[in-house]
Length: 322
View 1: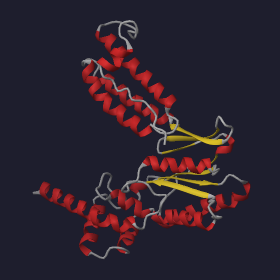
View 2 (view 1 turned 135 degrees about the vertical axis):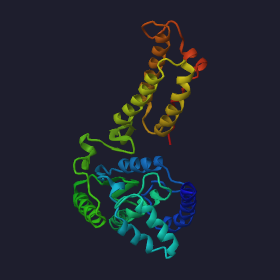
View 3 (view 1 turned 180 degrees about the vertical axis):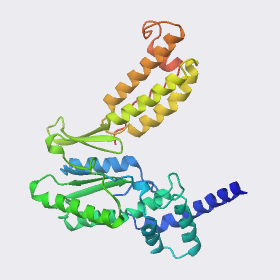
View 4 (view 1 turned 30 degrees about the vertical axis):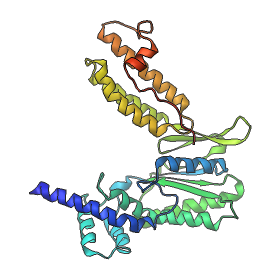
Protein backbone atom coordinates (compact mmCIF):
# COMPACT_ATOMS: atom_id res chain seq x y z
CA UNK A 1 0.00 0.00 0.00
CA UNK A 2 2.84 2.34 0.90
CA UNK A 3 4.60 1.56 -2.39
CA UNK A 4 1.38 2.28 -4.29
CA UNK A 5 1.11 5.65 -2.52
CA UNK A 6 4.70 6.53 -3.42
CA UNK A 7 4.18 5.58 -7.07
CA UNK A 8 0.94 7.56 -7.22
CA UNK A 9 2.64 10.57 -5.65
CA UNK A 10 5.51 10.34 -8.13
CA UNK A 11 3.01 10.14 -10.98
CA UNK A 12 1.22 13.29 -9.82
CA UNK A 13 4.52 15.10 -9.39
CA UNK A 14 5.39 14.33 -13.00
CA UNK A 15 2.01 15.75 -14.04
CA UNK A 16 2.73 18.82 -11.90
CA UNK A 17 6.04 19.29 -13.64
CA UNK A 18 4.30 19.22 -17.01
CA UNK A 19 1.84 21.84 -15.71
CA UNK A 20 4.29 24.06 -13.82
CA UNK A 21 7.22 24.01 -16.21
CA UNK A 22 5.56 26.05 -19.02
CA UNK A 23 4.27 28.57 -16.47
CA UNK A 24 7.67 29.35 -14.99
CA UNK A 25 9.66 28.78 -18.18
CA UNK A 26 8.30 32.06 -19.52
CA UNK A 27 9.74 33.83 -16.45
CA UNK A 28 13.24 32.36 -16.66
CA UNK A 29 16.06 34.41 -18.13
CA UNK A 30 18.38 33.89 -21.10
CA UNK A 31 21.44 33.22 -18.96
CA UNK A 32 19.86 30.28 -17.09
CA UNK A 33 20.57 26.86 -18.61
CA UNK A 34 20.24 24.21 -15.92
CA UNK A 35 17.63 21.48 -16.47
CA UNK A 36 15.55 23.56 -18.85
CA UNK A 37 13.86 22.28 -22.03
CA UNK A 38 16.05 22.49 -25.15
CA UNK A 39 18.96 23.98 -23.18
CA UNK A 40 22.29 22.31 -22.55
CA UNK A 41 25.44 22.68 -20.53
CA UNK A 42 27.37 23.10 -23.79
CA UNK A 43 25.31 26.20 -24.60
CA UNK A 44 26.16 27.68 -21.20
CA UNK A 45 29.87 26.91 -21.72
CA UNK A 46 29.81 28.53 -25.18
CA UNK A 47 28.06 31.60 -23.78
CA UNK A 48 30.91 32.07 -21.31
CA UNK A 49 33.55 31.49 -24.01
CA UNK A 50 31.94 34.07 -26.30
CA UNK A 51 31.87 36.62 -23.47
CA UNK A 52 35.62 36.17 -22.91
CA UNK A 53 36.32 36.62 -26.64
CA UNK A 54 34.40 39.92 -26.36
CA UNK A 55 36.88 41.02 -23.64
CA UNK A 56 34.74 40.38 -20.60
CA UNK A 57 37.78 39.24 -18.67
CA UNK A 58 36.97 40.14 -15.06
CA UNK A 59 35.10 37.13 -13.72
CA UNK A 60 33.10 36.66 -10.52
CA UNK A 61 33.37 32.92 -9.92
CA UNK A 62 30.42 32.20 -7.62
CA UNK A 63 30.21 29.19 -5.32
CA UNK A 64 27.04 28.81 -3.24
CA UNK A 65 27.35 27.05 0.09
CA UNK A 66 25.26 23.84 0.19
CA UNK A 67 22.64 25.51 -1.99
CA UNK A 68 20.26 22.58 -2.54
CA UNK A 69 20.23 21.81 1.19
CA UNK A 70 19.42 25.38 2.27
CA UNK A 71 16.50 26.50 0.09
CA UNK A 72 13.93 28.07 2.40
CA UNK A 73 10.53 26.45 1.91
CA UNK A 74 8.51 29.52 2.88
CA UNK A 75 10.27 31.73 0.31
CA UNK A 76 10.00 29.09 -2.40
CA UNK A 77 6.30 28.45 -1.78
CA UNK A 78 5.67 32.19 -1.86
CA UNK A 79 7.33 32.39 -5.28
CA UNK A 80 5.24 29.48 -6.57
CA UNK A 81 2.02 30.96 -5.18
CA UNK A 82 2.61 34.17 -7.14
CA UNK A 83 1.92 32.23 -10.35
CA UNK A 84 -0.05 29.17 -9.21
CA UNK A 85 -3.39 29.38 -7.39
CA UNK A 86 -4.39 25.69 -7.45
CA UNK A 87 -4.48 24.62 -3.78
CA UNK A 88 -4.05 20.92 -4.61
CA UNK A 89 -0.82 21.55 -6.51
CA UNK A 90 0.52 23.85 -3.80
CA UNK A 91 -0.28 21.25 -1.14
CA UNK A 92 1.50 18.47 -3.02
CA UNK A 93 4.58 20.66 -3.58
CA UNK A 94 4.58 21.50 0.12
CA UNK A 95 4.47 17.78 1.00
CA UNK A 96 7.38 17.11 -1.35
CA UNK A 97 9.44 19.86 0.28
CA UNK A 98 8.65 18.60 3.78
CA UNK A 99 10.12 15.23 2.80
CA UNK A 100 13.48 17.02 2.43
CA UNK A 101 13.39 18.30 6.02
CA UNK A 102 13.08 21.84 7.29
CA UNK A 103 15.07 23.27 4.38
CA UNK A 104 16.25 22.28 0.94
CA UNK A 105 14.83 20.47 -2.07
CA UNK A 106 15.02 16.67 -2.31
CA UNK A 107 17.93 15.56 -4.49
CA UNK A 108 16.67 13.65 -7.52
CA UNK A 109 13.09 14.87 -7.06
CA UNK A 110 10.96 15.15 -10.19
CA UNK A 111 10.38 18.89 -9.89
CA UNK A 112 13.42 19.76 -7.74
CA UNK A 113 15.44 21.25 -10.67
CA UNK A 114 12.47 23.46 -11.60
CA UNK A 115 12.10 24.63 -8.00
CA UNK A 116 15.83 25.32 -7.73
CA UNK A 117 15.76 27.48 -10.87
CA UNK A 118 12.73 29.36 -9.62
CA UNK A 119 14.44 30.13 -6.31
CA UNK A 120 17.44 31.78 -8.03
CA UNK A 121 15.44 33.47 -10.77
CA UNK A 122 15.58 36.88 -9.06
CA UNK A 123 19.38 36.79 -9.29
CA UNK A 124 19.11 36.10 -13.02
CA UNK A 125 16.69 39.00 -13.39
CA UNK A 126 19.06 41.32 -11.53
CA UNK A 127 21.95 40.34 -13.81
CA UNK A 128 19.79 40.62 -16.92
CA UNK A 129 18.79 44.15 -15.90
CA UNK A 130 22.42 45.11 -15.26
CA UNK A 131 23.26 43.78 -18.72
CA UNK A 132 20.59 45.91 -20.37
CA UNK A 133 20.98 49.20 -18.47
CA UNK A 134 24.74 49.29 -19.18
CA UNK A 135 24.38 48.31 -22.84
CA UNK A 136 25.55 50.75 -25.52
CA UNK A 137 23.92 49.76 -28.77
CA UNK A 138 24.98 46.20 -29.60
CA UNK A 139 27.81 46.24 -27.05
CA UNK A 140 27.27 44.80 -23.59
CA UNK A 141 29.70 45.09 -20.69
CA UNK A 142 28.46 42.41 -18.34
CA UNK A 143 27.44 38.82 -19.04
CA UNK A 144 26.47 35.83 -16.93
CA UNK A 145 25.67 32.16 -17.20
CA UNK A 146 24.05 29.92 -14.61
CA UNK A 147 23.51 26.18 -14.60
CA UNK A 148 21.58 25.24 -11.43
CA UNK A 149 23.80 26.56 -8.59
CA UNK A 150 26.88 27.03 -10.79
CA UNK A 151 27.12 30.74 -11.67
CA UNK A 152 29.73 32.97 -13.31
CA UNK A 153 29.49 36.71 -13.97
CA UNK A 154 31.82 38.29 -16.53
CA UNK A 155 32.56 42.03 -16.70
CA UNK A 156 34.43 44.05 -19.32
CA UNK A 157 38.16 44.12 -18.54
CA UNK A 158 38.73 47.84 -19.09
CA UNK A 159 39.36 49.84 -15.91
CA UNK A 160 36.44 52.19 -16.62
CA UNK A 161 34.10 49.26 -15.80
CA UNK A 162 35.55 48.62 -12.37
CA UNK A 163 32.44 50.19 -10.85
CA UNK A 164 30.29 47.65 -12.69
CA UNK A 165 32.33 44.77 -11.27
CA UNK A 166 31.97 46.13 -7.72
CA UNK A 167 28.28 46.86 -8.28
CA UNK A 168 27.64 43.31 -9.51
CA UNK A 169 29.38 41.87 -6.43
CA UNK A 170 27.35 44.10 -4.11
CA UNK A 171 24.00 43.39 -5.78
CA UNK A 172 24.71 39.66 -5.88
CA UNK A 173 25.32 39.65 -2.13
CA UNK A 174 22.13 41.63 -1.55
CA UNK A 175 20.00 39.20 -3.57
CA UNK A 176 21.58 36.16 -1.91
CA UNK A 177 20.88 37.69 1.51
CA UNK A 178 17.19 38.06 0.59
CA UNK A 179 17.13 34.36 -0.31
CA UNK A 180 19.07 33.38 2.81
CA UNK A 181 21.69 31.70 0.61
CA UNK A 182 25.34 31.93 1.62
CA UNK A 183 28.40 32.40 -0.55
CA UNK A 184 31.20 29.93 -0.02
CA UNK A 185 33.80 32.63 0.61
CA UNK A 186 36.70 30.19 0.40
CA UNK A 187 35.80 29.17 -3.16
CA UNK A 188 34.10 32.29 -4.52
CA UNK A 189 36.58 34.76 -6.03
CA UNK A 190 37.17 37.48 -8.61
CA UNK A 191 39.47 36.41 -11.46
CA UNK A 192 41.35 38.62 -13.92
CA UNK A 193 41.96 36.60 -17.08
CA UNK A 194 44.32 39.29 -18.45
CA UNK A 195 46.78 38.39 -15.68
CA UNK A 196 46.91 34.76 -16.74
CA UNK A 197 44.42 33.62 -14.11
CA UNK A 198 41.77 31.01 -14.84
CA UNK A 199 38.43 29.79 -13.52
CA UNK A 200 36.28 26.70 -13.91
CA UNK A 201 32.65 26.37 -14.93
CA UNK A 202 30.73 23.14 -15.48
CA UNK A 203 33.91 21.08 -15.45
CA UNK A 204 35.81 23.27 -17.95
CA UNK A 205 38.78 25.49 -17.13
CA UNK A 206 38.77 28.84 -18.96
CA UNK A 207 41.81 30.97 -19.86
CA UNK A 208 42.37 33.94 -22.12
CA UNK A 209 44.96 33.21 -24.82
CA UNK A 210 46.41 34.72 -27.97
CA UNK A 211 45.37 32.99 -31.18
CA UNK A 212 47.79 32.09 -33.99
CA UNK A 213 46.64 35.30 -35.69
CA UNK A 214 47.73 37.31 -32.63
CA UNK A 215 44.19 38.09 -31.53
CA UNK A 216 42.80 37.59 -28.03
CA UNK A 217 40.82 34.38 -27.73
CA UNK A 218 39.76 31.80 -25.19
CA UNK A 219 40.90 28.31 -24.32
CA UNK A 220 38.61 25.97 -22.40
CA UNK A 221 39.31 22.34 -21.63
CA UNK A 222 38.39 19.74 -19.00
CA UNK A 223 39.68 20.64 -15.55
CA UNK A 224 42.33 18.49 -13.89
CA UNK A 225 39.71 17.68 -11.27
CA UNK A 226 37.34 16.30 -13.94
CA UNK A 227 40.13 14.26 -15.48
CA UNK A 228 41.21 12.87 -12.11
CA UNK A 229 37.61 11.96 -11.22
CA UNK A 230 37.37 9.93 -14.44
CA UNK A 231 40.66 8.07 -13.95
CA UNK A 232 39.78 7.30 -10.33
CA UNK A 233 36.45 5.86 -11.42
CA UNK A 234 38.12 3.72 -14.09
CA UNK A 235 40.82 2.61 -11.67
CA UNK A 236 38.12 1.29 -9.37
CA UNK A 237 36.61 -0.72 -12.24
CA UNK A 238 39.97 -2.25 -13.14
CA UNK A 239 40.61 -3.04 -9.47
CA UNK A 240 37.21 -4.63 -8.81
CA UNK A 241 37.29 -6.69 -12.01
CA UNK A 242 40.98 -7.55 -11.82
CA UNK A 243 40.31 -11.27 -12.32
CA UNK A 244 37.56 -10.86 -14.93
CA UNK A 245 38.01 -11.34 -18.70
CA UNK A 246 38.95 -8.21 -20.63
CA UNK A 247 35.64 -8.28 -22.51
CA UNK A 248 33.71 -7.85 -19.25
CA UNK A 249 35.89 -4.90 -18.21
CA UNK A 250 35.41 -3.20 -21.58
CA UNK A 251 31.63 -3.59 -21.30
CA UNK A 252 31.80 -1.51 -18.12
CA UNK A 253 34.38 1.15 -19.02
CA UNK A 254 33.12 1.93 -22.55
CA UNK A 255 29.85 3.61 -21.44
CA UNK A 256 31.79 5.60 -18.81
CA UNK A 257 34.29 6.81 -21.41
CA UNK A 258 31.60 7.55 -23.99
CA UNK A 259 29.57 9.68 -21.59
CA UNK A 260 32.60 11.60 -20.31
CA UNK A 261 34.06 12.26 -23.76
CA UNK A 262 30.70 13.27 -25.25
CA UNK A 263 30.33 15.88 -22.53
CA UNK A 264 33.83 17.32 -22.88
CA UNK A 265 34.31 17.04 -26.65
CA UNK A 266 34.01 20.80 -27.26
CA UNK A 267 36.58 23.54 -26.99
CA UNK A 268 40.22 22.54 -26.52
CA UNK A 269 39.97 19.03 -25.14
CA UNK A 270 42.42 17.35 -27.56
CA UNK A 271 45.41 17.20 -25.18
CA UNK A 272 43.26 15.89 -22.34
CA UNK A 273 41.65 13.31 -24.62
CA UNK A 274 45.08 12.15 -25.77
CA UNK A 275 46.12 11.67 -22.16
CA UNK A 276 42.94 9.70 -21.34
CA UNK A 277 43.24 7.51 -24.43
CA UNK A 278 46.87 6.61 -23.63
CA UNK A 279 46.07 6.06 -19.95
CA UNK A 280 43.18 3.69 -20.74
CA UNK A 281 45.21 1.78 -23.31
CA UNK A 282 48.01 1.21 -20.78
CA UNK A 283 45.52 0.01 -18.14
CA UNK A 284 44.02 -2.43 -20.65
CA UNK A 285 47.44 -3.72 -21.66
CA UNK A 286 48.46 -4.19 -18.01
CA UNK A 287 45.22 -6.08 -17.37
CA UNK A 288 45.97 -8.40 -20.27
CA UNK A 289 49.57 -8.97 -19.16
CA UNK A 290 48.59 -9.61 -15.53
CA UNK A 291 46.15 -12.27 -16.74
CA UNK A 292 49.19 -13.99 -18.25
CA UNK A 293 51.26 -13.35 -15.10
CA UNK A 294 53.71 -11.20 -17.02
CA UNK A 295 55.15 -7.72 -16.49
CA UNK A 296 55.09 -4.77 -18.87
CA UNK A 297 52.43 -3.53 -21.29
CA UNK A 298 52.70 -6.00 -24.14
CA UNK A 299 53.65 -3.41 -26.77
CA UNK A 300 55.13 -6.10 -29.01
CA UNK A 301 52.45 -8.65 -28.24
CA UNK A 302 49.33 -6.65 -29.20
CA UNK A 303 49.01 -3.97 -31.87
CA UNK A 304 46.78 -0.91 -31.52
CA UNK A 305 44.45 -2.36 -34.14
CA UNK A 306 43.96 -5.39 -31.90
CA UNK A 307 43.37 -3.21 -28.81
CA UNK A 308 40.80 -0.91 -30.44
CA UNK A 309 39.23 -2.99 -33.19
CA UNK A 310 39.40 -6.55 -31.94
CA UNK A 311 38.77 -5.83 -28.26
CA UNK A 312 36.45 -2.90 -29.06
CA UNK A 313 37.73 -0.33 -26.57
CA UNK A 314 36.09 3.07 -26.98
CA UNK A 315 38.13 5.10 -29.49
CA UNK A 316 36.10 8.17 -30.58
CA UNK A 317 38.09 10.99 -28.97
CA UNK A 318 37.48 13.55 -31.69
CA UNK A 319 36.67 17.09 -30.58
CA UNK A 320 33.56 18.65 -32.13
CA UNK A 321 34.20 22.31 -32.93
CA UNK A 322 31.13 24.52 -32.83
